Length: 633
Image (tube, rainbow, N blue to C red; front, top):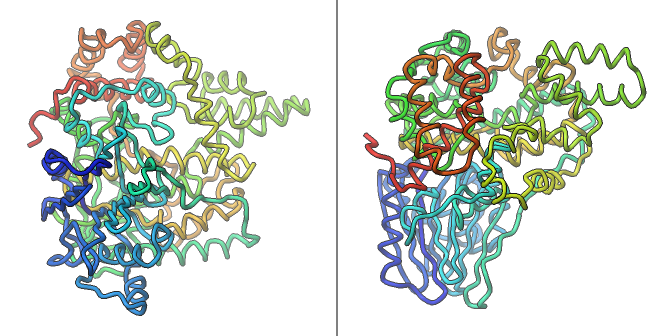
């Protein structure tokens, strides 16, 4: 795992490009404290920070081919690099190392930009092909590894983290108003934009090619798309067998390392299953979980301990509390680069710190919910769809029964929202279900001045364009498609940034693209039915994971922020959100922020929305105001 940065200039490299690339690499030093390198020639300058995982003595970057005219900087792990190495040797390529970095170079020599379709792993890399005067950049299918860039018409700058581009820009980078709307509407920024004006994120499963010799502009292309159209006609037992075989293979391949490896163990199904499989391949497995000071209902350590005892792992725990909250939050948002909706990022920071004390590589269960239907909203959508059908066919008794069940699950407010959207198209209902601030509440959040600034931007239209890429009309398929292509991005950003903040490599075997494609081919009814989520995965977990974990309801990994805010921390948060600095920004209606904060402090409601406002204000102070992270120690 590493950090990469570079400057490529159409008019030829300038003296300042070397220092700028070096400074970007220094800013992301936490991604690779073990080694660093720099290559400057002609029209480009590449810089690299290395976290040594495989071939500890080799693997120095930037790395070149045998003739020294194709250069690579790379961040990630290629899990099929052994097979590719053998294939490339047979084709006549000579290797100087035994690391996956060199495999990518020779694969590019052999197949050009098509090389990415041969890679199974997590990756973000940049290649400069000197004979062709071509820049080629690529990102893995799921977007596990990040890659940001900016282009001013002459120079393209790139880095593993947006902050490196922001902190080396010639002037203060301003927030992108559309991205502000996206964040509060959907908890994510869409279409490759970022929170920063002029800085883009190379989207998952995309490449960027800039042929400088032709005088053309950089262009991005999608090289892979997930299809939900073709379903397997198999029984549940056979489907579970296929998933089990591929998941075993994925976990085994993700354990390859020359440094110690462990697993997250939250007490949920996904991390417990990954840990169970890993324990079969490792003679001694270290597992890690976090608990909380405060409301016990969110503390899953009892389940994590049960799984650890069953698997006989060397189990480690960290307890997270509200002490030094704003100081810690500043560090977290600095590493995240962008504000975040989920309070789960807060304990994750400390969990990764615990992991770093024992191992350098850790496996987790991220991606499983988006593949196998783990979120409660999938069952919510099925119930809503049944209500809509009952309303259309005038089955009023059935509609009333469903309405009572909906109220029992999601409360009177939830039922009220559902009845309002009962006749809406399915995609509109999906949008409302996944929204952060409900579309009716969102305008109330923003000030009149900011609403005028973004009046021409409609996040629903952007959302719909993305969802139009799904090749299935099935409701659950479309929700899974959206979560994989959009919501998963915020989860992977947390995964990458919090692990890299502590210089550890986090791997996600559920996102092995073979398993992703298999999951998409499983009929939706085999994943979610009635009130039962993850039907196939639960079947895979039988006899590997304690039944108490398999059968318990899903509980998100989130700190008890609401109970923390009830103490002295509440006044600090009030000052952060309603002080002069926040008011002067002009984004929000002060009265609405007051009402939301009161709901948290008095009723313990709307905590996720207040959290998004807190992280947004902290992000503004760090980046928009240019304060930086403060003391990172």
